[in-house]
Image 1: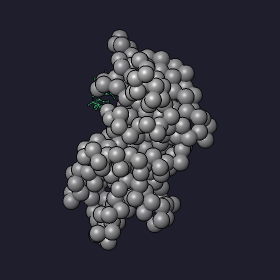
Image 2: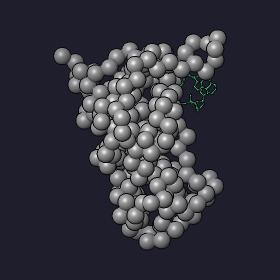
Image 3: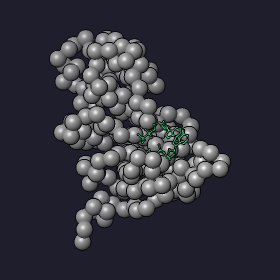
Image 4: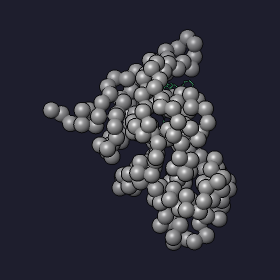
Length: 209
Ligand code: ADP
Ligand code: ADP
């Protein structure tokens, strides 16, 4: 996969309005882990959408976008979406990364459990983990994660984020509200009003001299 180096990402939803993103640069050499933080409306989701659009195929640039979705289908089918060639070992690794393995162990027929229209018998946390496991299984060159730990309690959020980052083999772009768990990332971009207001390592941004 080619490294991503986009020098000037500008996105307008309306021709007469201010841009949702205004000249943002994203540089992602192979394997780079980037976090994007900032207040609601800063342009974080728009940035992921722009990267996904630029990347073309979800196997190149894809993952968990703003509309984390589980489908009315079995757990296995939900995971295989986009990766029909995945083996049972691949499924188990992805489930483990997203913290679903205990559930799978406790309930051997989990793979064949049908997820209802509105999530059915899966809790909100399980749905979130299932969507995350699918993103991990997709294993794209650039993994996009929009608020991957939304709805999980803090301990689970830390565990799941660590699991997913460990499992991802390509570059990662993580949108989050939480600064916790970002110390191991290569770069943090702070967006506000569609512009980069600050960028650097966790140490540079969070630790005061
Ligand atoms: P976030 O949780 O990232 O802040 P929002 O709740 O603001 O997202 O937005 C949820 C959805 O609504 C997104 O898909 C976003 O693209 C869309 N959206 C946000 N703002 C607008 C707007 N001004 N007009 C139309 N759609 C919007
Ligand atoms: P964030 O993810 O940081 O909350 P977004 O990327 O969702 O921010 O939104 C950035 C800006 O673009 C906001 O002002 C939002 O209202 C606007 N916006 C987002 N999606 C749409 C949309 N589909 N149509 C119009 N405006 C949108």
